[in-house]
Length: 264
Image (cartoon, rainbow, N blue to C red):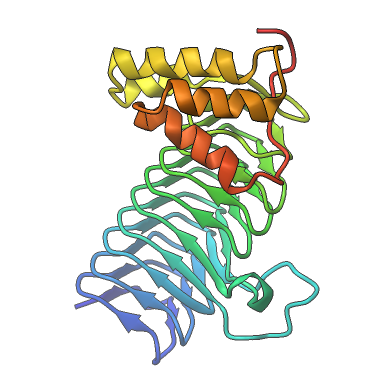
């Protein structure tokens, strides 16, 4: 049974799971689904076709399921899906998709979204991510699992950020970031591998050593970049982590890639 504060406004069409808590002055729209044990602290607004997974907590003044900030949007019924066990803090905003972008904005599970972070229309965000204060995504961005977005960082629309990568505070990311990469600056450049993140996630020393050697090969001065990609795939064919980077590059070969700003 849901617990609803008397000052909250909950549309009769909203679907509420067991033990949902809706705090003071929240507003819940007609097409919203809150799964079991979702907790809304206070002053939360949830609109549109929005679904929030179980055990997610939402802080004051968050706005989830708002219409896309896109001039082509004409009121079509698009969606926002948020997975379970997320911690969504104060003033966070997440918008529904657009028809041209597939119609769905999706957010994975077990993420921490700090104050005023933003997920725009048609983004697809993985699991176990951390968005520090004011981290911002443009439309159509893809964020892999275990990505850490530093405070005040921003990602340009259509950009991919590979899994286990790290964006430093204030980074402005306009080009794709390889898996396990670490980027800094405005505009962001590749600073190396996210070695701190790899250690925290328990990657074996052998895997880290393979990644470091592959990084040096990929971004060396000799030959063309395409030749170095093929050399890396050949030398490290037995390393799943390295091949994830190779696959990331090959899958969107026409996309610009964050590169090192100086010699290795």
